[in-house]
Image (cartoon, rainbow over all chains, first blue to last red; front, side, top):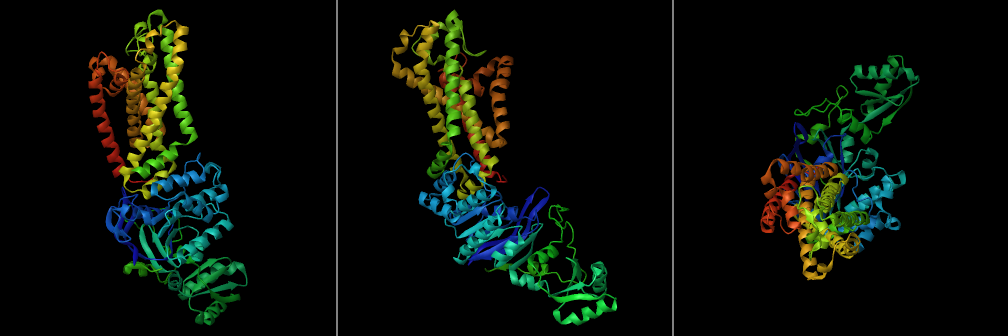
Length: 337
Length: 263
């Protein structure tokens, strides 16, 4: 069953195209990570799906109801959009009760969600006394109020301390395991990697990838990390590999070569022929962050965004490397968590 | 709509809103009553410029205790305008509007709930103000040498009539606050525009244009509070105000319905 379905969904703000011809399908259950650089259109996409923004083009459905009629599915969705919003002078409990009244939810449920996010003991305090992390928990509690089948959380771990991040990650996993669909937008890629089964990656409002996380990492290709004996040889070593036809990038005193582990001997030989002794040569597991940086062009999305063309800078891809973006764009992207 | 109303009432129960809104109305009501009663001892005085001149005879009539409130209704109106405007703009400035519209996408219900809740709040504030003035006006009048003999004649009718007229007038100011608040989404700008128009611009227009007193909103709201003026009968004031209210509500609803929630 499709929970979210978009078909050429587009949203413009004047000349800026925030979401462009987005084809996406998210199935029921599991945790879906929504990632992209700043200004990539993540929040806009969530707002359009929630009925807060009207689309400029295309179509979309949530629980098979068109987004032009969000009242058909509003009761099944909980959302935290950007920073949590509450009346500062009212207590946490009163703020939630106000939202509960609007949704026709009992006070007992308010206490339940306060318990879930660990704010039961602070429920009587005005929310203005809360730290950013506590406000974030209160925002998540508000999203959980309707006992939602679909939870859309925009940067839910923003402002949380490490223990809080782990707690929220576990909560999201638990909710996903219960059969709910949890869509999480975050800049913390390590968190996405730890919490999500599947990933939707967008840049400049366009879909870069949509599918299982492991598939994305696999698409990035096998890599080998080569560590030169002398640190000053790192740049030269990268140049040697690149001239040989292996895409290479420098980082943390090593050169990461996109090549299968079976070519290790050739890599070692190329280094030796260039007069560089390697102190280590081992298979390198590509992290989501590396894939993300490669796919999104290793630059902030806030910079150089083109208005109409949407090509505010080509991804700085190493020569010869394969772009996993084609997988996302060539066909209708489907996420079945 | 009932859910939206109950939700809004919880937010309005905010002690700071209650105390500042009702407290300010009571204070201004007492101030207006005191000024009118004290300055009327010389025979003719009181009242804002270009409004009905308050005479001693008016103050000594059956509804004399409310003359101050009625002639300075604009002061209470400003409080209502401010409260109504803040009720709208604070949803945007705090970002709460995101949660509200997501929870209840039928936006007209949110707006209807807010209007009913604010109407209740304003009616309560006016009731408290009227009650306090009713209690305090007599000793002030006696100190100022104003006869209160006629004040007890048909007291119930006088109080009910005075309260209804006053509340209607203050509510109309509130609708202006709602309208300007929805258009501007900024508390400061909304209040400045509302007060600037009704107190300054309309006053200047009234000086330049004699007929302005017969159709401008501020004049109509004032005429309702006083039960009609020489320029505008009560019935005319109600019809003119109703026309403004319909237009204001229509623009407010359409704006809210069509607007993207970017807050």
